[in-house]
Amino acid sequence: MSKILVTGSLGQIGSELVPALQKKVGKDNVVGLDIREPKEDIGPFVNQNTTEREGLKAVLKDNDITQIYHLCSILSAKGELRPWQAWHVNMDSMRNVLALAVDMDIKKIFWPSSIAVFGPTSPRNNTPQKTIIEPTTMYGVTKMAGEGLCNYYFHKYGMDIRSLRYPGLISYKAPPGGGTTDYAVAVFYEALKSKNYSCFVSKDTVLPMMYMDDAIRGTLELMEADKSKLSVKTSYNMSALSFSAEDLTKEIQKHVPDLKVTYEPDERQKIADSWPQVIDDSRARKDWDWKHEFDLPKLTKVMLEKLGEKFAKEKS
Ligand code: AKB
Image 1 (cartoon, rainbow, N blue to C red):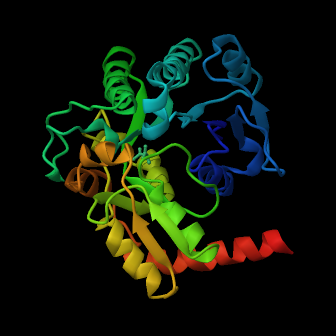
Image 2: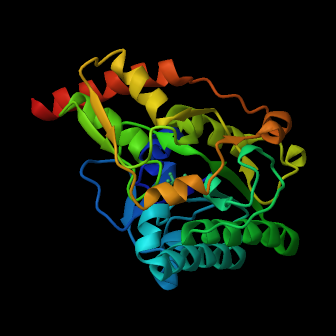
């Protein structure tokens, strides 16, 4: 039986991935790790900073870990405020995970890359799996370096590292923090709270997005896929849908007609403009049969329902 460590387990992805993994392998076989403390019982948990190698080593050893989902990361917008902090957290933690995995014979790892690996010189529409990669954010630079490390560790140590270039992820459980695509989540919160949202990108900004359930299912499917079928050793393009900020507003307004959104682009606009609008994920669809399920109307409906339930619960 696998014993799995999930770093960044209280973050936007981790808080949904941990229960999904627990369902598969049992609650006691998934250990969450974060620098924050959980507010409720989420199963086995350790408070640890992944940039501290000795502490991380002890966690791997004490829990007999055989697989790692290394999620903790500083995202794009926050990374631009303190670029070297982003480099330190994203790269030193990855270096520790990889070095310890070699030492401790942990062969299977998941690590998230992002559409942020691309930059303004990559084709923006139907961005191919293999293309020019010249990111202009520090977060993107860490994704480019990380992808190189995935490939390097595969060739040098035979390590089975699997990775996805996530688009903007839309979810209701844990809010995202510090990303450029966060507006696509924040607008749902304000649709139900104040009915007013000031969006920090222009209304015609189009980015690739995905509902979290698709992202989690895709991640687990990639990890379960037959190794011999995986032709990409850096990170797979993975896509679901692309829409403009205004398309999203209009879809939410079908349910919340009095929602008012203004568009006041700030420094995050430049980041959004450097990323692809539509990603070509045909390699993922061919190699491990990736398919998304949520389109814009479906994800909008579910987000409003689930967030509504969450707010009602918080009030009672
Ligand atoms: C961000 O906006 O930084 C992230 C990402 C696309 O990786 N959501």
